Image 1 (cartoon, chains in turn green, brown, blue, yellow):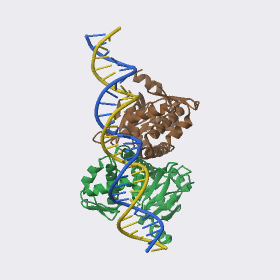
Image 2 (cartoon, rainbow over the protein chains, first blue to last red):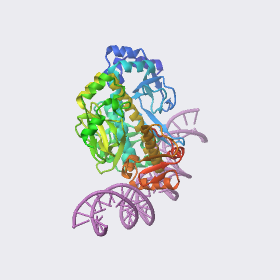
Image 3 (cartoon, each protein chain N blue to C red):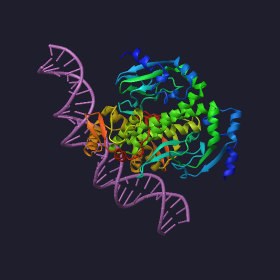
Image 4 (cartoon, protein in one colour):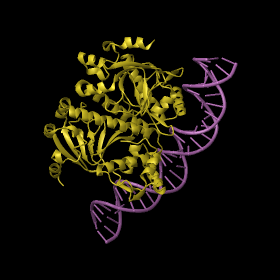
Length: 244
Length: 244
DNA sequence: CGAGCGCTTGACATAGGTCAACTACTGTGG
DNA sequence: CCACAGTAGTTGACCTATGTCAAGCGCTCG
């Protein structure tokens, strides 16, 4: 499928899958029309970098489909994923000229980008957008804080279980209120990405997944597909304190 | 000093020490007057709880002086400080009815509180406030993400050094651009609070401080007063990635 | 078929946690 | 003024969860 095809496919805001949750959620007809003049779509393949920390940013964007990560690194290479970007999440900070984080596509991805200058102008002049942006930022802050509890205080097993809970919940929400029992979903992350998100090594991630499997908390099909026979059990393993 | 005394002392916004950095930073005369009608001061002693997670919130506030912590806990008592609130920082989330975190005074503290309903109304109607709130929230999000790197990837020694760097920087900023060399400041946190902020135990905090002392990275007077003979050296020990 | 990647597993090392004793203060009551 | 109890912090001995290093498996791609 070419870029043009997708552009056509998603071109109309009224047909947009994230219309109700993205920055533009509260916008009316006229505001959407205005946003339309400054927007364009971009596609990325799994693994591609989207933004490098330090880049001059001339756009902000919403994730339309797929998963991206926000990462921060130290000079010696230790890296930490500081945010997972899922459909409807916002990329970029209005008012900031240079990117603070690396953004990487973890799966194939479609972004709805806005030229930064006119978008910033619109944030200033359109309360509906400013307010939505504030809401979304506050939600991200809550998510980041929940993650701080995980990073600082949870065991490796609890970390893995927490991640599975979160991915399960977000997958459910996207797919609509599916059957809760016998939940099944795909991990959008490699073991390495999981490790970088959870503050662990790849080996510990692998071992803990094996242990959860051995304990029948989860079932694996291949290496990425997860079945959860007893979701409350998984939540107990996560030790509570999850959210997002 | 009685509450009334302090109220009188801080009562006038024009004499307020955080006037230029708090939520009200961008407000004009008329807006300040409006804020004045919904505001009141509260004092807390070191150690006092300010808000319990789950409480119904009927105010939001700015920290005027002192230090408070935002904490999150698990059922079994493991706790993590997810935010340090310093003068000019904002407490509470507009649009949320119940508190999500425990807020505790770590030192004696003065807060400038606003009744929640009228404040929310004002956020809606006053772009200057809405915009400032967005800025502050984005800054907090950046700080939270920097902390995620610390929690997930730094060693105990780096964590301690990072905390010292941050406290030093914020103290400097409050006191004005003081002499950089031979920096000296008080820790506003107990060893336990440091442990809860850094995702460590009290013992590890104590040991690492002793080691930094032994390595002449810091000098101690008593248990709380720190002297830093070589600030760049301390920053190297922190392993970079700090901010706030 | 071989190379490369994502993942798993094992053997071993170690940073940081746990448990316990001890010091140094600080405030309280006799 | 002393005895005492209660905090905050330090230090030691030991333990364990997680990291490190290394080998190997099972794909997919060329």
